[in-house]
Image 1 (cartoon, rainbow, N blue to C red):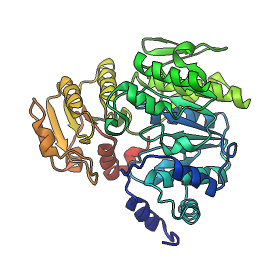
Image 2 (image 1 turned 30 degrees about the vertical axis):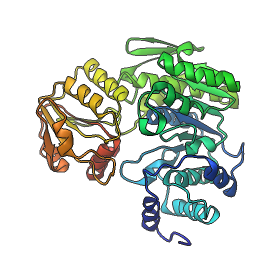
Image 3 (image 1 turned 90 degrees about the vertical axis):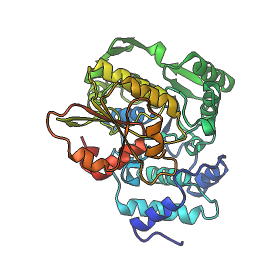
Image 4 (image 1 turned 135 degrees about the vertical axis):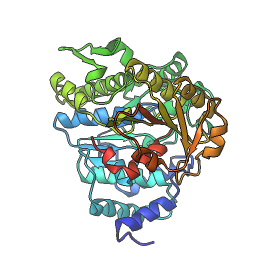
Length: 420
């Protein structure tokens, strides 16, 4: 192929690369960055690495920067409905023309590198953000750290959200192994680290000491008390979880991480840190698929929790908000810790449990197999849209969870739910 003449042609091409194809190594990315004209200093960027909370932290950081007047670039994954969700400027989707210009330049300049799906899009994001002259590019890592495509960039700040068990088939079975892989994304310079388990923190701090990174810990800068936190700054910032745009107690951690990153960034880049503006930004944040109350009556909650740590956080958030789902729609990918996820789901004691298939995903666990793993009665769900369409006012709460790809199936048929 010589060029992309339309966006659908590009979509066919990028999908042909295989969204779930993983090839270790940064050689292709390092060469690709040179070929598209990237060099250290050409793009002020922050990389966000971790297991849980990466997308929410990226969302919070983007709105903090934008509310302070900066032009932002946001690169996240996966997407729900359109690949255009992955690359945004000032949190806005970009035109077909912008996408095609970048895609054609990456295709022409990097021919022969055999880029993966994620590498191609990462190079496109860098090219677009450079051309748009963003003041801050927020780059969410994919599944790892050591060989993640975003790790090839020379970022101003590295961020580590909570690390837990996920992608064990690639990263390792223990927290130490997973943390060791993610820690390799760390570079000498400012590093912001969320509260972690002792095993994870030991690995991250060891890596920071080895390379001489300047570590800023959330636990050293915030006081957490119940459903609120206080940032020890002058003037101090105090905010409750109920005031944050993204719901769930666990969003306090993500908001705190982003706030500390913004503080470090403003100090490093001599930008404004306005406490009132920070609070307004955190209150205004919206990110679909994270304790997303898509419908109020009947209450339909969409949450992308897909590993034990995330599912436990979801369970606790529901309890603290006094929400007891009567119906749960659950599915997951077969390479997840399915047994632990099922145990947590059963602990919610929902009256009805439905298991749909996740469409067009080679890693999905067939609903017929998943149903058999539950001790309580679980039923296959053959048509998710018909089920949701049939809900009526005053029905008891419905929770949909287990995979971001399951939520993608829902947002595809209810695209208006993607918006606040």
